[in-house]
Image 1 (cartoon, rainbow, N blue to C red):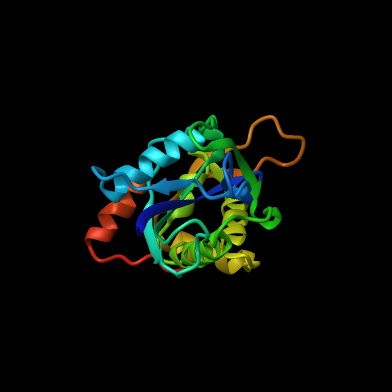
Image 2 (image 1 turned 90 degrees about the vertical axis):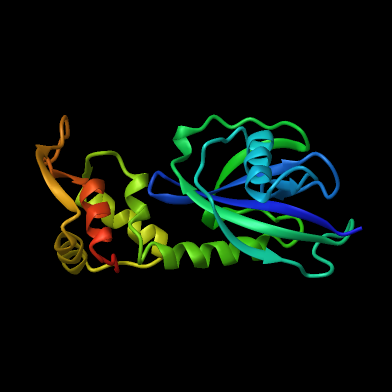
Length: 219
């Protein structure tokens, strides 16, 4: 019998590196994999995603978007399974991981050092990563991963990490400031040995108001 499953690609940003949340399965195939599992009869997809992420990794209250449906005939060696994948981007330090049900362990991995994965999860991650890189160029999702007050250099490093390429410092600063959604706080770094840098903040209210007026964020 064909089954429907959900898989979650949860990216994290920490220590100026992109990370990925994986779980180590208890049962065959025993390997690292994306959090996820079969959708129950009484569940809709969003409910199944929230339940699986909580059960297998202890993570809750995360905003996720539906990514793509993966349905290759032999993607799961146990039976015919169609998986609806979701993806999201969070701060790993906000969560205390815990594993239950069919997950033996939940762990953040640096994106450039992932282990061998079960099923077709490497393909799912590749598609999610492509979508993430595209999204950060037209939506300011990166600001959710920074402190309320941040250095402009930290903002640039974040976007370089998410996009996987270097950005020209002067052009990046000029373009971001031209949007009018990042503003100086008038404050400086505290307790640093070097020259204190100016702190900035993202004006989310201003951004939302501008979107209503037809503003389009584009890097």
